[in-house]
Image 1 (spheres, rainbow, N blue to C red):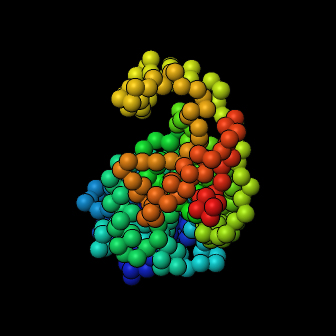
Image 2: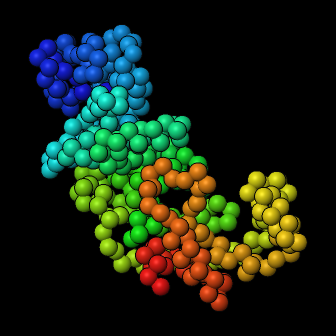
Image 3: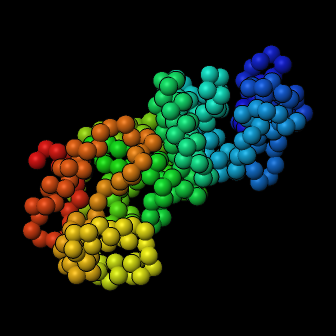
Length: 311
């Protein structure tokens, strides 16, 4: 935790020039805390005694503490921002609250999806717009995990997107136009903003009208071999798809590569997406209808969602 209070109830942060020998208290439970200022980890407060307090249960990494501090130091120059804002009605502490309406949460470690859903719903019920910024362990690598899908947001201008935050490169990264191929591999575009740049303008990007260049991706000519291998190793997705094909008297391995067009599709999740409240069916339907009319199946062109629904 980066915030404490003094005897008079004044909020103090470790970013202030505080004496290590001062007397400080947790702003939530009012228990006494110590100022920890080492050579490696970001200066922070820690409870002297373990208590049943939301603040005492947080085991924050150096990455989390440093990123939270960097965001605060930048945003406080132009916005009304508080760090470690406590919402008593939901017993949650937001990493940062900006202009009373925006919550920024830096998530550096995995968490149960139902906890993500709960925290997000609680913020929304308190009239807060929530943005989750993913630390290194949660960045997109090759495929989207179920948890990563729950961090996805959606915009008609840039499609499916999520935010990554990079301590080493000192930047915020927007991954957008996210699609998956039939083996689950992700393709997307990225834009970055320095952590000392205009972050609020960057956060607005998904809501702005953008003239994006379409993404051209080549269809995989070796797809059938990959499907065969997936079936050999009893991949759950392909086993189910083969079972459905058998019910129609079809063997997937007897089809042509063209029969699997389009090979790149927007993400889907049977359980839905935690952060997305929009009805995605019009987009999925328009995407499918557009690709049915494509004659050249060697190359696929990916457009933002607004392109398909205008056709």
